[in-house]
Length: 134
Image (cartoon, rainbow, N blue to C red; front, side):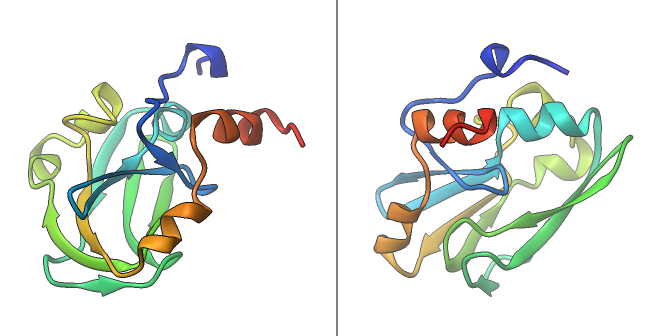
């Protein structure tokens, strides 16, 4: 596993305590698990994806990621409707390990409530959270 300082956390991305990330552009949030989560999980071998059209509340489980070490639930960082899933993950789940913010995105959602994004963390706050700072 890498040191926190070796992991990538893009500036224009929001982070949840459950280690999902969300990048909101033009009313659409792209969601995945961040570099810390994929590093902790190890080699990802399977991703269970939701269906396009499914709706979830913030904090709901929307799928799972299976690695050689464990199975981890995926939680919605924002309430909304699934408008796309990354079908490339069905045949190539390792994309999450290789590129968690680009090719390894998991879902795209249309958020229900723009105010929910304010409850997510920006990069510096998330790094403090990971380090256990107050």
